[in-house]
Length: 635
Image (cartoon, rainbow, N blue to C red; front, top):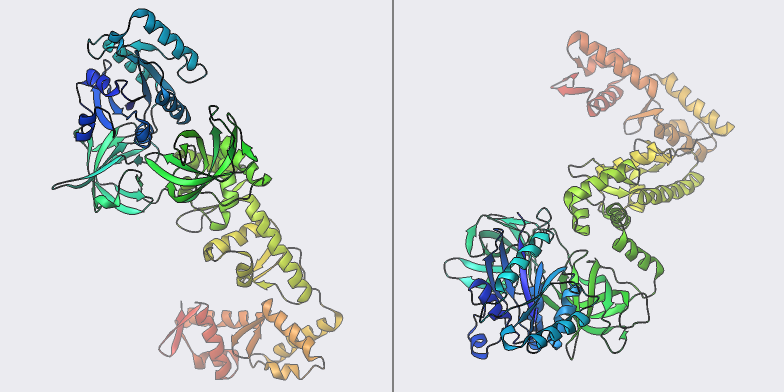
């Protein structure tokens, strides 16, 4: 079911609160000072049932310029606005500023309500309507219905209710499938219950028992209870005004400006990139690094505007800017921000968030600006590609990609699958949680590894390859898990860039080429082992046979690296064939007799106990055999 919030806007004393009372019978001015002064200071909340059966929440915002901060906190979650203009006064300064704010926030549906109609004659009323039509041309309200009402005589109230019902039907439903977010506009304590927060759910849904987080403080909370329009509920959905009772939270831990959201789904930041529109009504250009007030949801944060693609922003122009803030802000891509001047305070513009967790950038940096254009205009596939180009070195999970983009999880899953099928994204599946890499990241790593191996092979022509762990430490970040590294090496090997041989990595095209002298050394070493049978010669004994000791060392190590010599114990080696033959004889003996002793093995191999024990312990280590008292059995 679609849930809609209707809000008022307009100049002070134009009858917003009285109008809501006429519509609903409820009094939204509840503070003693409000009633005493006759103006709205804080936000007022109520609801009413429409003819269609829908229940709409209503937010009454203050009209006085001193309380614009409160007004902004209220209108940030509305779907339909009733812009209230007193028929006896017409458009006033706060009427214009409220309209500008509504446009910045991208409110699309609205009604122009001309209150106090009973105080003016028909000619005056028509003149006011014409003036409004002229001044609202080009705004989202240029074709909005104008309805004259009198809260005193109830004239026009039924027509207004019908129009509200019509616009709520036409309004887009908020995303109940997305991640839950509720900008907090009030927080208070209730005896026997604890801390309660209120606000309009701008996306997702919340259930009793859900674990939540308060941003930007990252305080953990649990939903103890929910009320929607004053009635207990088990669930609150996007578009509804809710009161949420939180467990494990003190009132001082949360207040207006906080954001209640799903645990670990958002990041706060002190830098935000946005497309900023500077109001046409401004008298002079906006200069770089001007100090401003930034409004998002129910929060107000001070900061400076760094203009990225222009020297200055002229009235009516848009530009890419980076907001450098004095406190953390928690927002998502496409959230709307309103910007006001620091002092004196007035609205100067606003726009849409492009990068909610921005990196500090210099001005006029073309590649950074191009990246912002992709983020702003690109399809989801483009956004994921762009994100992965920056995130691949962190080996992000799907959840982390969703968190970065602020997009629907199912949509991200489908887009990732498309990119995998197109060969643009690689999925690592070696851990319980899959990680995703952009193809360009892998290509860069392939090139980096290739350069390292080229140098290595040049300096070590008789080495099988570089140690795989050495490659890992030189090329990849510490956050890469061993299983993921092994998987990446396998992918690069499948791409025929490298060859992985046990603990060694070589270029796929690399071949060891022995000189004639080195070939002779190799053949002589193998012959000496064959002559010794299972009484293997020691390395020093072999070395003594050759004049070129360095050449012997190179060839001897090569035979070990290539697996042509099998090390069974310190300074005890056998040729690969010798070792495999010994293994077969021992296995056959165990299969026939159930077990083999060291003495029986010595007789089988016709050698001393020293060499037999070395072979048996090697087979134990390989899990071919295992020791049982003084015998070996098969593993």
